[in-house]
Image (cartoon, rainbow, N blue to C red; front, side):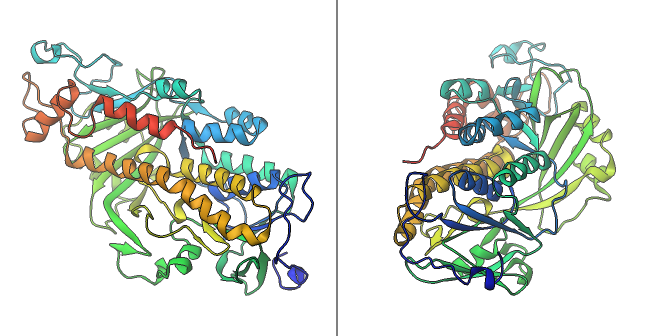
Length: 475
């Protein structure tokens, strides 16, 4: 399928497309670069619609690699729309967090107990008033508002295994491993695209979908960018700007006092924040975000003392998690992102980008994979509505127009969350101790008690989560 001979008889020009069983014609032929969550979801959506789909993946074989990923309500609703059986299989491997208390805690004053009270001025005069929780995220309320499944987590390998299995039920040989897409040649309107593979062979397709991640080869060619591995500039690579943050991620088995009451917690302190989440089977995943120059490597060795030194004076809740984490479970990566592609289309002829290839996101809202899943669904629906190969270029431009506004908003909110937490907030002021005395501490205090919240008060949180959870259906 991936060589010249196999595609010798392929002719894309001016074919009526078989988008539905009642429509005469031949199936749309789609090549997908990358077998991650976005690429596999796109493959499954399209295979279910009768398309002829081949995924080209760089890894030699599927391996169980990668930790849990946040799966928000909007992405779960798309999975359910694709197939009820698929949704049930995902649920079998799922851990709900959105049904429990999730929110922001005081990184210095949290005392290990579960208390989620409404913000109150009692904090001013009552030393016993709960001070460790700032705010509760309205995950359950927003899911209920839109009638969506509740947010949670799933192990990435479990999700990929499910998607692979569902695709193979339809087309057993749909994926080719160890032979990624290196580039493409557009053949003009209605004539499809030639896909150039790493082994020197080519394949022909009506549409090429670039789902090959943040360092996408398809994107690099489309926008004329350098390939990451050829760049010596750590601050900007392949159109990506270093976010200013590096993240440490670890996993441990730990049952805290509030284990059954809380889903995930964001601890805010001076110039940094620390996140923990229940990820199922007694496991807790954590992230520590720091403002460091790119390439400042501290993991996997040397991370323990380093991270603890940056959290001196923080709550025992944080220290207990760090102390119980096996050293070899910690990974570190520098975070890169891009501004929204408002002025450049995601499509070039019969080639289109989805997921991290075109809109990588900061991980704070857990929307990177979710938006890739939305992309896959909307793209497949848009292509199904296309009646002939002559109209494919227009269809891909329609897909871009359908997605650009929503994706840009989510990108903005994801980046804003990091910048506000690190640059605008601090340990809140209290009349009962000296832990918060900066101007940011007073700002954070007012935010906590629903005073003045310049950008991100409780009302803004409800608006933000409503925007995230309002899934986009193709028009």
